[in-house]
Structure formats: structure tokens, C-alpha cells
Length: 437
View 1: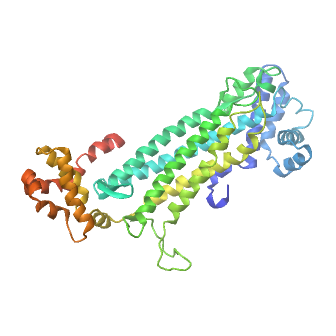
View 2: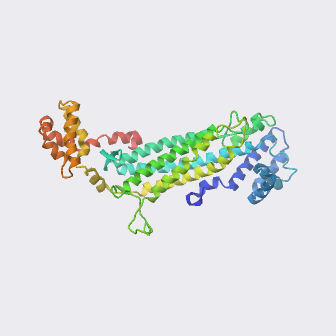
View 3: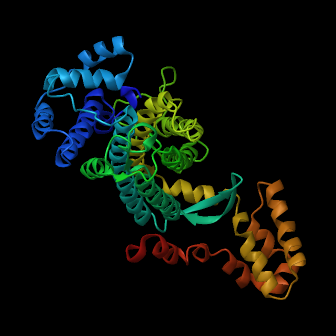
């Protein structure tokens, strides 16, 4: 996580100040619940609650940790300095460090998920607007990087919208997955704390109690969360890769907006590069980098170990902050994308009609030719065009007596109607956007 690729709201979730504030809330809610149960005096719980008005001194906590070599003990020691050691003697009663760490991590992941969900929703709005704008803007579809058949730019955006809609569902599921807390004590048996304390803390923190915490929350939940982030990052790269392709000089069907005063190259003043989309490709790799370590965190020793801890200190902030930045950047790129419809049409015509070959093939079979004979006739004429840039596919077909004998000039002309390829665009849009399609 570096400032260059961070946005303030997401970065703030992972700041030491936020972390210690969440730790405090967990401890304070636990004291409230203990007081309600009559386990600790009410005045002690109220003294802890009053500490919430004081800003925690991160430097002081770090100073204590340098001596204790234990972050939670360092925090509790500092809290006792604020509350008063006698008044704070019941803080953390019956609890273990993981009760604080895991529950706080869940709160942070839930808050991060809420931002990411909002990010995807914003991107979906832009994708829908661009899809509607270019619903009938013809461009050539490609398979294997080779011209295939006509499609529309609107369908391209609609495809990305459908993909991101699936990602929205994945993020919501991921949020639900990690929204559990644990205040169950050492090895998770509630030996020294009442389960009612856990229920109270979780309710106050917007979480559900983990059914079996074994001192830590099971890491399959976190693996699913980071896997979902990895899929979203893959979709970010998918869209970015399409934009990078469209901006290639030989294609130039669309390009990133180029701001006044922007420079494309230190050596070549003419350059306008897809730097934002290339950046998004790299950021997606960083997010996916968190997935395998999160998966490997699932297998821990017995009731707990801390092999997952160092991993999560890194991937928690890094993956969420980076993905938040990437989604916001992608939204701007799509919103400001400069589209060149004339270049799209010119590219579609570069193969001089070859992209209409399937229409001719099907017309011939409809006219009675076997598929094998129809394919032979179409390919025979198509290869002439491939091998001689001076030839035109429609002209070659019109000059082929076997073809004209079957479908005539009118049949050939009908096969070259681009409207044939866009006649079901409304149906696809209806599937993607519903009544708004």
C-alpha cells in the first residue's frame, strides 16, 4: 500500500488510529456486557467507556510494544494508563488476543467491502451509460485477435456490465462471509467468559458470532473474501486490456482521454499512450497476489497459530486499498473514453467483406447446398481475397457462377447487410439491463 495508489477513505480503515479505535470498542462493549451480567462492577465498565473520549497515542503504544513484543498487551497497557490501572483491571477479562484481533479484522474487512461495493456500483453506472450511448455503434468482433463478425461497442460495454454485476454479487457474498466476530477466550471454549458477551460485542460491531471460533475465526472465510477480490481484479484487467487493444495505433477504435498538458513520452512528443489501462493491469496483478497467501492461511495448527498474522497485516490493506483505487480509476477511464466510430467502421471493412462469410455460407445451405459444398465455395472465394489485397469478397462471389446459381445477386447482397448482426441487440440489452435496456 503506497500513497500513489491509495484513496483516503479506504486507507483510513487500515490506519493505526482506526485499528486501535476498533480494538477499544471491542473491549468497551465486552466490559459493558460483563457489567450487565454482574461479572464486573458497573463503575469499571463506565470508566472504560469514558476512555473513548481520549485519542489513543500511537507512538506510546509502539513504545510499549517495543518492550513487551506484543501488540495487544501494548494497547491494553496504554488503555490502562488512560483509564487508571485499578479501574481497568477487568478489561480483557476472559478474553484472548485473537478475540480482539480477529473481530477487529472482520470489522475492517466489512468496511472495506462496503467501499468496494460502492466502487463497483459507480462503475456499473458508467458502463451502462456508455453501453446505451454506443448500443448500435458497429465494430468488428475478434476471435484469436483476428476479425470475426460485426458486433457493437454497446455490446462490449454491456458484456463488461454483466461481468461487473456478477462481481457485485461476489463482493456482497464476500462481505457476508467475513462478517463474523469471536469473543470466546483461549481455544474458543468460553471457559472464562459468557457467550452472551460475544453476542453483545458482535451485535454492537455489526457482526455475527462465529459458530466455532477455536480461539481464531476460521480462515476459509478470509480465503473466500480475497478470492472474490482477485476475481474483481481480473475483471478490471479484462476491461483494461480491451481498452489497450482499442488504442493500438493499427486499431485506434477508442483511446484514453488525453489531458491538456499531459505528456506521453520523455523522448517522443507525439505519443499518446494507454498508461491508465496499463497501470490497471499492473494493479490487478497486485490484488491477485493476495489470493494464494489467503488460501494458504486456511491450514493452521490445531486451535490456532499465528502463521496467518503477518500475511494478513499485508494483504488486508494492500488488496483492498489497491482494488479500491483501481476501480475508481477504471470508472474514470471508461467515463472519459474517446470513441472513434469511423475507425471502427474502417477496421470492419479492412478485410473487404470477408467478415460476412458465415452469412453467405448459411444462405447457400438454405438454398440446398450441403454444408461441405457451401463451405468450399465460400472459402474458395475468401482465400482469393486473403491472398490478393486488390480483390473484394462480394465481387468475387458475384463472379462465381456456382454461388450465383444457388442464391443469386440478391442473396449475396442480403448476406452483406450489417443489420443482420445487430437485430438482436435489444434482446441482449434487455437481458443485461432489464427494462432499462
